[in-house]
Image 1 (tube, rainbow, N blue to C red):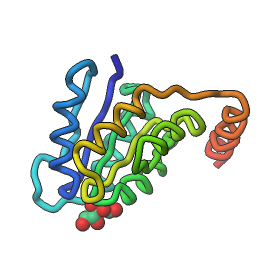
Image 2 (cartoon, helix red, strand yellow; image 1 turned 45 degrees about the horizontal axis):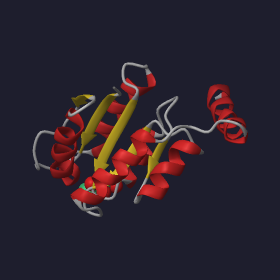
Image 3 (cartoon, rainbow, N blue to C red; image 1 turned 90 degrees about the vertical axis):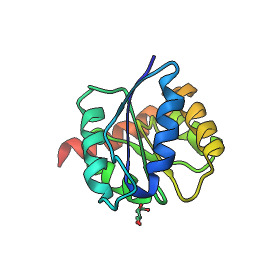
Length: 147
Ligand code: RB5
């Protein structure tokens, strides 16, 4: 069972609701908002989720906005976060295998519910490969820690 923090802005709200219900079967999911389609600012939700993944309270995070781009930019400002914008199963798989991504960003206005579910399943079931990829990820971590 994976502990997952999930969040969205208004543009990702509907997809977030669907994914939260989907993920409840088999995972521990906590929803950090937003609660409706009323306009909200994606960085507020991105930082809430990213900080909880960064602290170790959750294993992974899922963030959804219109494109996934704003969430990804904001989440990657939080130390220890490797947020990946994924648009198909292949990018989801490689973001885990090569980048050890710990937050998945999705576009609520880009993906269908079925596409998003397939991406999430692939992302959750893929493992980091380590090896030469670990060396590269370590360089990112070292850079971050030296600031
Ligand atoms: C909101 O209109 C939209 O800008 C936001 O959801 C997101 O796509 C930003 O990156």
